[in-house]
Structures are given as structure tokens and as C-alpha cells.
Image (cartoon, rainbow, N blue to C red):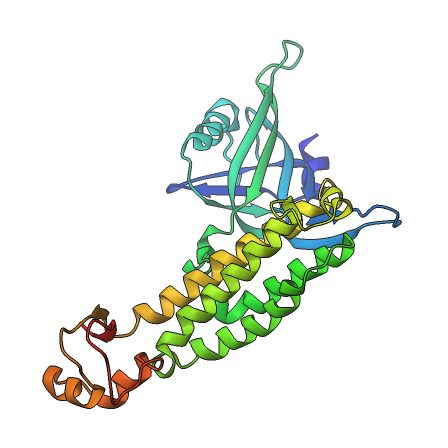
Length: 311
């Protein structure tokens, strides 16, 4: 029996937590695939597919442990010592290295096992082992970082617009979002040159998204009933989800861009001021004060007017 097994497969080895077990393999099965999301639309055959990445690869091995083996590299006391050691390694809860006969070494975790022993076969156990690939060793912090507006805001606008068009719903604010998103990305690339404009543009995106959401959800009485009924369809969830993601991303991007700059505070003065005089009083560059107060007359600032200065 053992000779037939090893004629097909060399031994497999499982290394985890400083322990190693080599065992014979009878069968080896590998599973894998892609995580595909299907978006079905009314009155249209088929579905739009989004590929969200690969599924975790898995390996299922059937192994036989018996007493008194003589194969090279195999512990002759496989049963029960090596078997118990192998199954005890499932409690380590660590990523290990599984060396497969046909695959070589792979980084994975032990998921499950099934052990069968019968009275008809003494000193023999048949075991089914399942392992799953673990990519945590290669995962970087960037994999968990929320997307920034600099890289994805326009893509989010396009996605939300796409789903709205598929539902037959449209709003003039959706067309404005593309322009707002492009302008916001441009401003973020040079935050010190457009401090006041970054916040304003992010708020414009947020307001436009809110108006579209209100139209879709029927919060506005001016929206015709047929448009509201369209949102009962499942694809409406994708549109609203995209709008919410866009609002969050644009607000976060504006906050991140401004957080890298000197702290800005708002002050008022009881007497008339001008930016040239304030620059001298506060010891702050006139050019920078002008950039963060683009809406003010630099030569005459009435009493009580909010003025942005560096804290």
C-alpha cells in the first residue's frame, strides 16, 4: 500500500511554531477561484461582473498514518506519535509552511482535519487535512488604508453616475460632480496654494451628493414619482452607496490635505485692519495670509470680520 502511494507522491511536510511533521500523501486536492460580484439589471440579459480579487487557495490532503513504516524521511512511529503531533499543531493558530508534493512550499494555516480509525485496521489511521493559503505575510499597511480623493474621487463619481444611468435616473448635480472632483484633485496637489478653496470644493461635492440622495430617496417633493419608484430596484443601493463613499472620501481628503499645513485659526479685530498690517503685527508672511483669505479685501478689513491666520 505504501509503495503505491509513494510511487505517485513524495512526502508532504508541515512546519509551524518550530515543529515539523513529515507524512505520506494519498490524494491531494487544490481549490481556488475569483471573487466575482454579479450585478443584474432589469430587462437586460446576463449580468455585469466586478472582479474583487482571488479567493484564498485551499489544499485538502488525504494521508495514512501507520506503525512500522520504512520509507525515507518518514518517522517509523507515524502512528500514533507523528499523527498526534500533527493534529496538535492545529491548535497553534499560526501561519506555517506546508510543503506539498506537487506544489512545493506554500504559506498557509491549518483549517480542519478529519481522523478515522477502524477496528478492522489496527495501528492505522486515515486523515483528511485542509489548509488555506495565508497572504498576511505579504500584506502591507497600504492594503488597509482608506482610499484618498487624490486617487479615487473621480472613479467614485463615474461609478455613481454609471449606476444612476442604468436605473434611468438623472440629476443635473451628477454632471457637476465630475467637474467638482477634478477641481478638488487639482487643489489637493498644491494645498498651500489653495487652502480656502479645498474646503469649499469638498463642501460643494458633499452638497451636490446630498441633493442627489434627496432626489433619489424622495426627500424632495419636486421629484416625480416614477423616479422614486426606480429606487426600489436593487441597483439603487449601488448608486446611494457610491454617493456616500464619495462624500466621505472628499471630506477626508480635504481634512488630510489641510492637516499637513500649519494650523489655521479664525480671529476678529475690534478696529479696521489690512493684511499688510496684520502681517507685521503677527509676524506672518503676507503672501500666505493672502492665500488663506482670498475672499477678503487685503487693504480694508472692517471691524469684526473673521480673518484666518496661522495659529
